[in-house]
Length: 321
Image 1 (cartoon, rainbow, N blue to C red):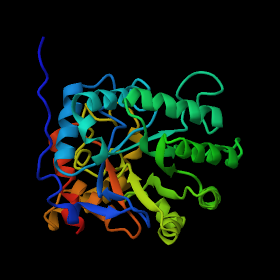
Image 2 (image 1 turned 135 degrees about the vertical axis):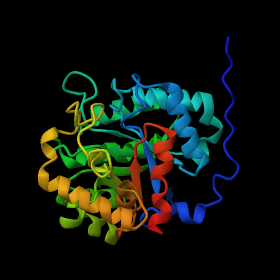
Image 3 (image 1 turned 180 degrees about the vertical axis):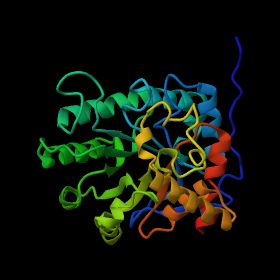
Image 4 (image 1 turned 90 degrees about the horizontal axis):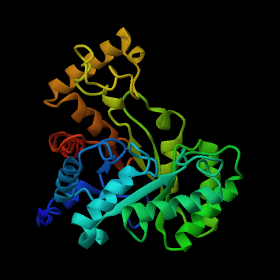
């Protein structure tokens, strides 16, 4: 029987703490400016050893926040199962140094109780997530999407109770409309579980949270903000500047349609790429640094298919400074 190499975290992982972390809103939580997302590359169809190498590198370089959701994979639940395996193999003794988040809201299992924002779904989902990840609590539990058909009080009270039951330490909201977010903030304050963070898409091509006032509202209320899809599914890299690679998401029509890459967008990307080159950066580095420079942003959520890609993306911390 082959024995796994015992992982010991790098002793210098917090040496650059002043540059790497910033406060999440007006809370006591310091989050890394770059957080690691498990949306892709950590599911049951992916290499566990690659996932292990990426998370080792992340933690060795001060990334303490791992972001998951109940249906990340594929298949659904398998990213959390990978996290559970990583906890058993490597991270159990570092649990108090990790900030682990998960979410519920999108479809997870068949039937009327397997998605959206009912109390039944949220309570079942957090229990399942904890079992899959082999942990007693998550640091952060999100409502993954707004449910227009469930009373907002039902969703929010279930989240409050999840905290009171010790299954989560903090609460987050992802992609709710601004008017619903404001109601949520008031409700959670009144129930002594203030909202820690709001998650939404923000990048150089999609500035909706800035344009609709969400980012300013969060900053004014002392709520952190974390950006997902910071590279616009790879558009804000050099990947599509000279055609569509055969192995790309766009070529496979997977989360990124070929029709998106219009001549006008391509010209914009080429201009941004030239601006990045003039600064001595890659387009991806500049795009990530831009997000961190925006008022009210706490962290940027990056995916990684390799250690090399993660290392490159982490350069944005110093570029943003």
